[in-house]
Every structure is written in C-alpha cells, then in structure tokens.
Image (cartoon, rainbow, N blue to C red; front, side, top):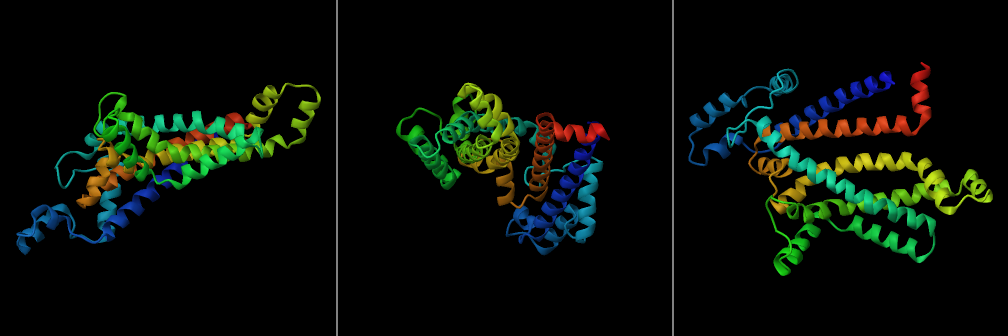
Length: 311
C-alpha cells in the first residue's frame, strides 16, 4: 500500500511543478508593466527602469523562471506583494482557512443534496421524480454561479434583509456563498449518481438479490450504492477541487477575504507574485485532495489494494 501512496506523491510533485511553470509563463506573457502600475503615469523612464531592475523584471525568462522555482520549492518563499509589500505566505495562511471552509461546506451541501437526488432519480427511472431530478440538474449546470450569487444578494439581502450581502463574520455570512458555490456541484453529483446507479441496478447480482427476497432498501444501499461509488468518488474529488477554485468568483461577489478575492485583486493590479503564489497553493491543495480520492479508491476497490499488496 505504501508503494501506491509513494507513486501518487511522486505524481503530485510533477503536477505542482507543471502548474508552477505554466502560471509563471502565463503571467510573464501577460501584457502590462507592474512597474508602471506601481509608480503611476508620472514616473520617468529612469525610475521605471530602476524599479524593473530591483524587481528582477529586466532579466530573461529562463532566469526569472529558475529564480521563481528555487524560491518557491527550495526556499519555500512565495515572495512579497508588489502592491502591499507584505509577505504572500502570511496573507495566504490568514486567508486560506476561509476559502477552505467555503469549499468544504459547498462540497458537503452538494453531497447531501446531490447524491439522494441522483439515487431517487435512478430508483424511479422514467417517472416524475426522475424528470424533476433531470430538470434540477439541467438548471444547476446552466445557471452561472456569479449570476446566481448576484440574484441571491438582491433577494435575500436587499429585498428581504435576511442575510448579510458581503464581508465575513458568523455563519450567516457563509450561507449565500456556499449555496452559490454548490449549485453546479449538486447538479453534477445528481447526474453522475443517477448514471452510476442505473448501470449497477441493471446488473445480474442485483436481480439475484431481489429474487432472493432482499428488501429494496438493502438492495439499493447495501448492494447497488457501494458498487456505484467509484465514479461518484471521482466526481466528489474533482468537485471539491472545483469548489476550491470556484471561490475565486464567489469571494469576489461577496467580498470575502479569502484566497479567491486576494488573487482577483492581484490579477487586476498585475501583482505577479500574489497570483503565482496563490495558484501554486491551490494546486498543492487540489493535489492532496486527489491523493485522498486515490486512497479512498484503494479502500473501496479491493483490486487496487491487492495489486500493490501482491507486489
């Protein structure tokens, strides 16, 4: 089993390294001059050149890339923000718990709502329950998250005054962001669960269990659902990662001081180190999520475990 874990950890290293190179290259090619933004339009060419030199922006691409990879992965230093002159690592440590809280609750809501919706749809295939589930799924996938977030602000904050429109505080501040961030995942979970359950329900061993007189509840939850978990687990893992990345839009709409809002402001101001550091941290978090998914695979599917134990 340790061989399986080490193999996945090795793959994580290459994934995070690849993400770091890609995001550095994108930010390097983005038009614009951070020195010009910092000093303003009244800066002289000499001032701009001196600032570029002090920031290392005048060096070749490969040199800047090497320095970035060295500082990030060897020195474990994400750098300093161009705009605020504060430590990026310190800001991320302060903001990441809020982003993680939002992503975790979004995933839980999508699981609590999406899985039963898909199971009910599969059990009642072709009936009104199935049609309602498909309709809800189509609406959830079609509605843009930022539009839904804005509509929720207008309804629940401006019109009804039930929930705060922006900021951070108690649990009420998380209600609308969690709902806006989880609608798409609810739809995807419902569709995948329905599809996986329908494939399993048609299997011979399910027919045999019913012929033996096993109750329908036990057939669904003790025989069908465990065997349909593999594709569902995959979707839950990627859905959690998507929820983590989706906080970029949700946090911007609700002005939540998380990594998403931090990164959006940095993109607007061409604050390269903040964008690079935030993306690398999110990539590492997503890689660990997928590692957890792979370990759950090995637990749920004995074939994976037996393959590495046998070796």
